[in-house]
Image (cartoon, rainbow, N blue to C red; front, side, top):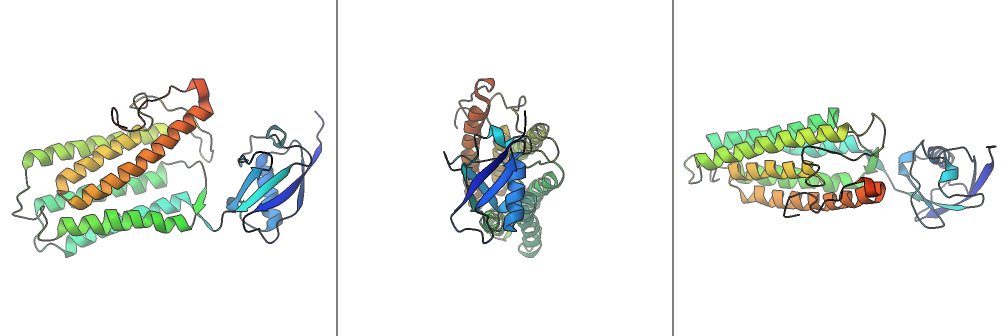
Length: 302
């Protein structure tokens, strides 16, 4: 099929980019990725700051090299809207900075607060530190992100969740001399502690294994999606969140801290929202190929 030149009308959505062109011409064989690249070059801005939608129905044009412009529904003379998403930061760096807070704060306050750390305080520090060390290592060597960046502002919101709620909040109420975990506390029940550690280990190992399954669905540097199977994925939409919840139930059982419970409730609530959205995305993208789940994260509950 002969290549044709398509000319699009470019309109800003929100605050316009200073050098955003009014028109852009592309070959009909060009991809949506080429569209993003040319618009970024013309407006002298990062490609990751651009959100491009069709003027006809407002649907998003994905930035992918596998989608020809001619297959997007755009025609010669079509209008497209370009929104500046503002300063961006890579997802990988965001995760690293988020998890760094608790990873530093817990060992530090463990060394500073208790005059004579109890075995339960030592165990609490070990479990929380290992949890966030695992997250850092997964971020560096395991996770493959479907999008490269996120708005810079979200870094501060996300970091507050981990640095304050999971970091200072849990550490202060766990390592001080008056904490239930301190020596002489009334809550040092060996059976509860043992059961909690077992739950923690199951949760962390299960979470890691589900992350390995999710990694296998995406090529290095790619943004393709697939349907995960096995090891809990037939039971709930996001077993990685289910196992994450188990790990935090274990931590709560060891720390005997209301602060840990508060963080766990907030975290589980947020994971439930993400899991619900993922279930909806699976249904939209894969249709009948996807086995719909009744529960998205916790069997019989959510």
